[in-house]
Structure formats: C-alpha cells, structure tokens
Amino acid sequence: MSVPETARRWPDYASVWRWHFYAGLFCVPFVLWLSLTGAIYLFRPQVEAWIDRPYMALPLTGPVASPSAQAAAAVKAVPGSVLHRYELPEAPNDAAQVIVGKGGVETRVYLDPQTLRVLKTVNEDDRLMRVVFRLHGELLAGTIGSYTVELAASWTIVMILSGLFLWWPRGGGMAGVVYPRLRSGGRRFWRDLHGVTGFWVSAMALFLLLSGLPWAKSWGGYLASVRGVVEGHPVKQDWSTSHAEELKARAAADAGTRMMMGEHAEHDGMAMAHPMGSYAPLDRLVATVRPLALAAPVLIAPPTGMGQPWTAKSDAADRPQRTDLALDGATGRILSRKDFAQRRLVDRIVGYGVAVHEGQLFGWLNQLLNLVTALGLILLSVSSVVMWWRRRPDGKLGAPIARVRAPVAIGFFAVLIALGLFLPLLGVAMIAVLLTERLVLRRMPIARVWLGLRPA
Figure 1 (spheres, rainbow, N blue to C red):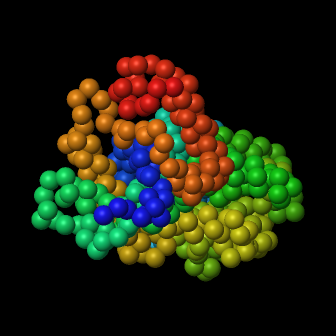
Figure 2 (spheres, rainbow, N blue to C red):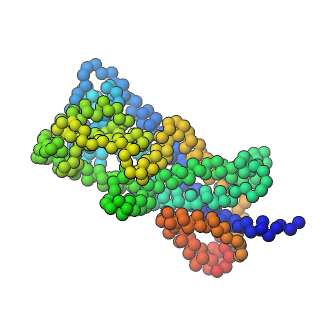
Figure 3 (cartoon, helix red, strand yellow):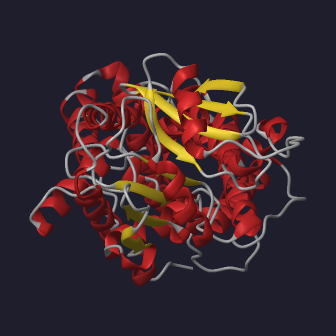
C-alpha cells in the first residue's frame, strides 16, 4: 500500500535530529552539572539554617547590647573593615550577624548579643551555599564560566525543543508517548524512557533555563543595556550578572561608606556625625524597622555616598516579599518605601521567575517541583548517553545521516532563528556551527565520514 503524498510532506526530521544530537553532545555534561548544583541550591534555607543552628537560641541571661555596639564589635573583629550591613536578628536570643568589609571582601561576624564575644567569622564568598551558587552559575570560573553556562543553557533549550519535535505523536497510541513501555526492553525501553521523561519535564525545564538568563553575563548585560535605552538612564537591577560585578559593587559601596564616615556631619539626616567606628544611628533605625515585620533576612546598611540615606531591605529568598526602605539616620524616620508591587514590570517578572527558579515562591511544593525537574533532566542525560552508546557505529560519532534532499522543518528552524535573535550568544554559536560544518568539516574526508556529512 503506497503512502499518500500528503503524509510524505511531513518534514523529514533527519536535520532536526542532527541538531538535537549535536546540542545534546555539548549539553549533557553541563545539564548534569547544573541539575546537581541546582538541586542542592534549592534547599539553601534549610542548609543555612542547619549551619547556623549553633548560633541560634543562645542561653542568654540578661539584656543584650545595642545594635550599634554589636556593629562596632564586629568591625573591631576584622581590622580595617567598616560596616556593610547589619542583619536584624529573627529572635532576641539569636546571635547577632553583622557583615563588614574591606573593599570587595566581606566577612560575616557572628556575635554573642549579650557579651559581644565573637562566635564565628566567615568570608561571605566562602559560605557553602554561595560557593554552590557560583558553581552553578559560573563554574567558579568567573566571566568565562558565566558565558559557558549561558551557552550550555541556550543549547539545552535547542535540545529540548528539537526533542519535542522528534517526540511529537504522528499517529498510534499513547504508549511511548505519554507513558513508557517499561517491559519492552532493549532499545525501545531506553527510547521510551528518554522521550516520555522529556515530555513531562520539558515545560518546567524550559522555564528554569529562561528564568536563569538574567543572571548570565551576556544575556543579563544585554537586558540591562536594552532597558537603559528604553528607560533613558542606566538601570540598577536587583541581581548581578557575575561575581566580578558583585565584587565591583561591594568595593564601590565600601569606598562610599568610608568617605561618609569621615569628618562630614549628619547633614539633613543623610550623613553621619560620628567618628569612625561609631554606628549610633543603628539603634534608632532598628527600632523603626523591627515593628514593620519585613520578611527575613532584613539588612540595614549605612550611606554609600554624599546625599545618600541609610537603607533597610528585606532580602527574602521569595523575592515578591521584598521591600526596600530609605531611612533618616538622624531621626530614624522612613524617607521612602518601595514594595515589590511598586517595581517596574520587568523587575517583577524577573523576580517571580527567580523565586520559582530557586524554589522559594510557593514553599516546599516549589522545591519538590524543581527537584523532580532536575532529576528528570539527569535521567534524560543518562538515557541519551545509553542510547548513543548502544547504537554507535564503529569508527563514527553516530550522528544521524544528513540526507541529500531531506525536506526542511520550516516551523522548527523558524523557532531556531527567533531563539538566535532572542539569545545573541546562541545565535553566534549556531552560525559558527553551520559555517564550520559547511566550509570546513565537509571538506575533510575523515571528519566528514566520522560525522556522517555529505561532501561539499
């Protein structure tokens, strides 16, 4: 029985399969790495609470020292430092946590709030979950690592979209499409496991990949530049695109704070009329901020430049709960308040995306959903390697054969073009891959045979 011509017009997926294969070849190690580190980072609140447990619920027997005395003791514990942020204790008998700094280097000092004895000091960048965060976003390799992770995430988007195209049902039942045929064994078992897992986790995986882009050095900088043009001025975003950028911002704030702690008076409530090392305004500001019951942790910071106020902010992991305050250091009065709902639409969209990405928007269910997605991505990666290993031919990579006159999947490649425009780094990479394949690899007999390419 001949196949109707209309059926033959379904786009042949050999070309799409090649893109899926190459994307997977590059992405699999990074998908495994990002899934593992991301799954660990999901539980940052629980891990940090466990690490800080020895410094909570201390057996205090009398009144505690003032916040300004606590800040002064923390600064004294790290010679040459100044106050960067004072963290409002969640309970009266918790250790005081004060972040002090020298340039871009910050140290968190844990203090007995009653005796001002130093309980612990730790470099902020050496805290376990900060290390995991940088492993996840930069591979601990700085700007190059950020570009690499962004490129891997972008190719993973291509891998997922091409996988969905290949999976899309073309007749038949739901077996191997919505649920795997676990008893089939052999190649069909691994193919079903791969395809069905990809179907169920693809939507959330795409969301996690896209919501992580604002942190990336290239795309995050691209977003900031576009916003600067649209809004007519440089924008200050509630997230950094690299650790280097964060260190630069810390150093600038540190320099500004040191300048303000010189001989300037507390003019119009903006600067401080206190000698170096005195943080008397903290006492007034803590009294103002504590009754507001902002989402923890709440950080109070000194001015970082002429005409700048003290600030207090909720740094909650669930970003829609965050609030920013400008405070008068002389009187403790609130000068301005900006809740999450008052931020620009882009900041709110990114804030919600980041909260979901980190598993913090809707509690443990969010963490569970992200964990299942991460485990699904790991299963996808492992099953793809198993399938490739079982069917790979001798002496060849095993990429799908490029057919001479294969019909083109117009819709899919239109999506790729749109992705290349939306993700410029991916666009450049795709052009580089195409040019390398057409102009170089096809002209090299050994590479052409190994990759399954047709002659130039």
